[in-house]
Length: 333
Image 1: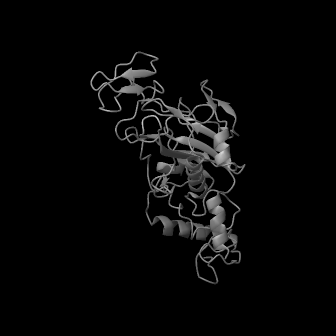
Image 2: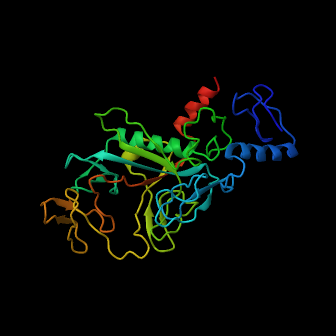
Image 3: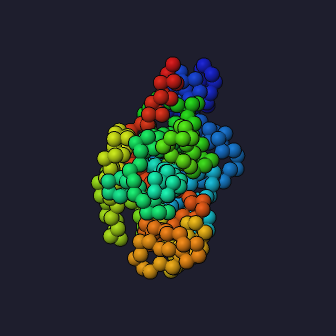
């Protein structure tokens, strides 16, 4: 078994630095390396653990929502009704990777905190409660995207994260359990009175087309047309680039799909939760019970209830995150 001569931590034969003390370690022979990997897996997962084997360069994702399925779980924790079997997506070889982020923002039209549900071509957000369209502050974008970049970059199942060939950060990595124990990680709001995002959460995964197919794994941004004819415009709006100029390659708003076999989509009043009557193609509807005016952003997306769940924004990142670079500097001291 290969061990660090300084702190006695076990390591694989391919390791150059110890994951515990970050000191150089001598190479182990190939036979010992194979045994070391098997023993490390048993220590991490426990003997007899039913966790499935996942290739080192792959992610287990839910084929319905695209979120990563942690190795400790058998199926997606969000799509519980259908329990679809996870599929493996091989990590890209061009140093780019997908992450999703969800958050709420303060609407200037109705003074409510609403989830990000849709974006205009220039990057402004549309309030799903009142239909008001506004430009989101740069601070909100910067906070949300930096958190998403850090989580997608440093998530497991490898404790070093998804980027290879970088200095070791496992002892300091705050997101190494993402992809193993949980699917995403919450973010922190900077100050309660500013324009930073609410209910911020991000995680790794891969976007799914409305037809259920994977968005082209080799997509490099711009626009993408699926085999079903659906088009994904992934251009990064100028206001987003101003907020976070480096690392963001493409940006796609998730398009929720109705459950298989569903023929009717229920619309509810955002104020009293009563059913709304709206003709096909309508953009607004008035509740006949409380008189509230509701904006229908997309006929295929139900308006939020009193406690709406944030929508999901998929971001294609490239290169190490700022959080990883900071941890590498700390580990090298």
